Length: 95
Length: 491
Image (cartoon, rainbow over all chains, first blue to last red):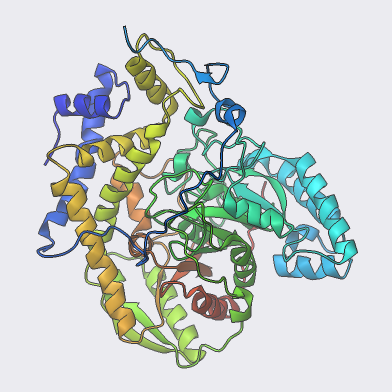
């Protein structure tokens, strides 16, 4: 399988990365090189094989349903590029 | 007094306990070494004030007789570990001047045991790379050069700063992380010891995430014993990481010097690649001979799905990365590029903040997870991963205690020499290490010799889950036979 220029633009949008028109051919080449490399997986017989979900056989740990953190709003917004009080500022989302 | 920077961690611990020197003296010696080695670009942030304060505190605790196991030992920290109040960037522009308000579990355990932080170490951006050339702070120089050459070589990656700093005697040990070989490959390129423990052995909490089902923290050190000492402090259960395993941490150092007599060591035939350099083949043979002389039994084993590990990795790892890196949106922390809409803000921020390699991997990950392609790529890769793990399980079920392989298919190469035209050329560096991450197993790289150009080469030992102790015992046999290697100082 390989990707065309339109697919490269669609992936870039899905990944929320702005890509200029003149970058598309280069990216297309790189992505297709990677896809060609992983193509060899199609020769593996995976009939009846379970996909791996956990590399270490262990029960998923569950914690007590209690509040054990919080009251750190100052810390949460400390590194934000734009804030007002304890709110993150973003461009208008809803008209 | 000998130069304090040339001691191993174990030797320094003895000297500190005997009050031959203080932690402040030891720390100052390393701070001077760091200053004199800035051309290597191993450190992206030096924290001398904090280092001296921590050293003084360690000296006070040593004087009082309540010193922790790493009291007063100066270490470097890969910039992937969140350090409270100290800039942490994963060497990506997108994290900008991020200053964590919390400390990663692994580093907090090192400080609990008395270690001293010298600063933050360079790495490939988000740990994506095998040469430390993708860092937004620029490439790291390997302290090793080819005989008679002035060409600066890469230290490997992604933990290139860690490996370079330990090899150049700038810190007594360093934290590192390994997703596909990022501890073991740079260790092999710099004649240092690096261990990636079993998945779940060290907490991932507070470590910048790349591919969560593969990422593990571990040390890079000057000797096998030093690595054992560091791992003991770094490892352990952490309720904040649901994949961290709740089993006791053994005294890894006790495994050093333990007899390996009667151990069964597997030599996997699939690792004998076409066109493998003769000197790698020879190194591998020497390793087998040394272990046999120590009483181990060598057996040929088969890991039939080996060749599919790297392609499966280049689906699983980018897929997880594309999901993990979705958090860098220009809203909550890090870089922000303005946009007229929220979408434009995201797209501009991420275009400006991610380097070429990270962008490529996020895009490929997005593609393989997108509607219509998930089954063909991601699901198939996870099935192949099950088969890779089963290869190892079958091998261990036959009584094999550990597997011996080369650590890398070549020695260190020059900056800019690889991956320019085809990214896959760079990815092939991890061909011997990536299987271990896919199967969640522990793996150690130990320096074992030099190539014809005088560059270090390493061997890898792969162990059963949570049997790091056997790797330390076997690793020390190789270290004793091969000796230790120190680069000639040119910086």
